[in-house]
Image (cartoon, rainbow, N blue to C red; front, side, top):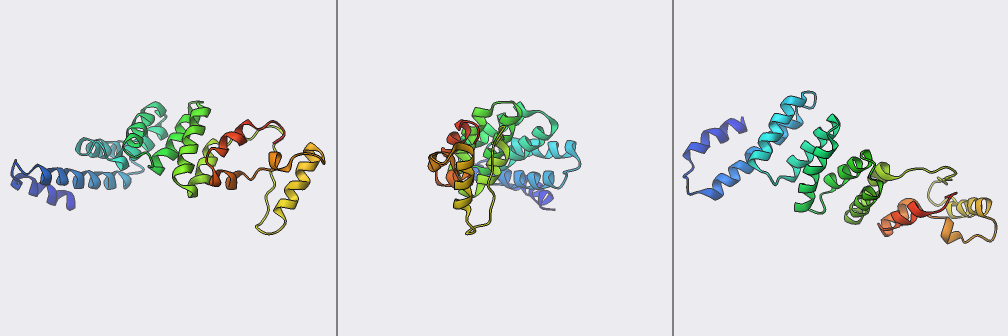
Length: 200
């Protein structure tokens, strides 16, 4: 209905009213994005709506994200990354695009680039730490995790595990790292975790 109304209005907008036409293009692009989202089980229809949205609004981060998401699901990871790069160039803190970039880079085996994207995402939004880690964190042989509830002796448990793995004289601060908390405090902490020697 909204799409039909816009189409009826277009012929009545004067040629010199470029600002109005631009705004109409933007609104129509949003309509196409919404229609694409409603066609999740119809990839071809979804693609057509997203292509039209990008024709009308090439710099729409939302359209770029949804097109990248579609391409990634279809296995065209490089095509997805092209859209994601464009979106992130326009908005370096586009959380959805940064998160999908991490997944695409990991799928291509570009782990260090994925870590860099992870650092950017966590720096932009501390609440995205879990999402980023889910995509980029790789367990290594002999990794040991201590998972506890808050305020139930976590530090003590980590000290015990550190002593078991490294001996009683081990530097607790060097080995007993808090993964999410460390990254939340400083996104570059992801590199320290990555480069820790086994057993971590």
